[in-house]
Image 1 (cartoon, rainbow, N blue to C red):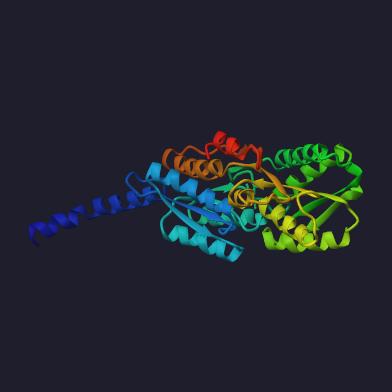
Image 2 (image 1 turned 90 degrees about the vertical axis):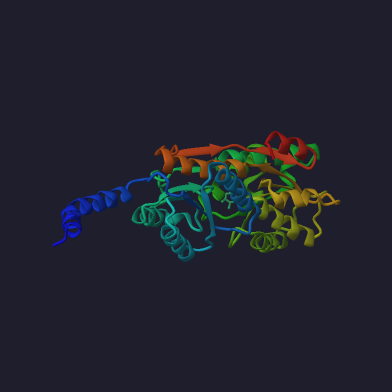
Amino acid sequence: MNTQLTSLLRSLPLLAAFISSNLVEAAEPQKPGEPIKIGFLVKQAEEPWFQDEWRFAEQAAREKGFTLIKIGTPNGEKMMAAIDNLAAQKAQGFVICAPDVKLGVAIERAAMRNSLKVMAVDDQLIDASGKPVTSIPYMGISGGDIGRQVGQGLISAMKERGWQPSEVGALRMAFDQLPTARERTMGAAEVLKAAGVPSANIIDASQGKSDTESAFNAANIAFTKQAHFKHWLVFGMNDEAVLGAVRAAESHGLKSDSLIGIGIGGSKTAQNEFAKPMITGFYGTVLISPKRHGYETALNMYKWIVDNQQPVAVTLTAGTLMTRVNQAAVRAANGL
Ligand code: GLA
């Protein structure tokens, strides 16, 4: 046997040990030099809020030099495929706003199976019994607090106009299967009731989906049935919900002099409405932060992967009431 072959055979056990130690390493969190890839999965990619979130997550990706993989996942099937797809692309983690929060446990399992870290944004994930999956770090708004801000905005605008609480109808654009949506609208309703709006005047319009068209359809039915109210206050889970209701109101002849709508969000949907030469019933919005939700979650995920620094379990972000009048100042103060 020639000497080269002999030495190769002798080194085989060493080679085997080297390979196996590297396989073990591959299962560990992060190998130096391996490109970082982070997924950002959102339930409604067409909604301006989620576009903004992605834009700010991209900013974190540019700053830190990781690859952001953005995937719109409008249903559970697409979402599961997207998680597998991330694993195939050798991503290390992902941030998600799921199409259905009840998929929380399934998401956690899929992430573990694929050795992916996972963090939830906007909508907190829940288990089969409806409890939050606290092992998945979460960043979102406090639905109750932001909803109460909406309620306070509605009440002060109502008082400015001298409307009596007893004569207003209050339209709650409901999307109660989503806990944050329910908390938001219930928070607003609570403030209205405390200010004297009778419970019987709070009218629920249930949206089938969380978009403007579904809100329009739901509100249209409510305005037809409740034609006796002189004035209306309108609130919902987001700007799209309130905008749909405002458009439906217009088709019933209810304009800005008889309707006050306040949304939640403050991105393009609200900005476009404010930019119209005519003042519409879309009076204001509680501006929340797509920058915190997009940039910070992506950055937190990056630090988790690279420094093994796990994000805090729950981070709640704040909001500010923004109207046509103060929009420039509020946006500037929020670095937008
Ligand atoms: C939910 C809503 C979005 C937006 C975010 C904010 O996901 O569907 O429209 O309001 O919350 O966190």
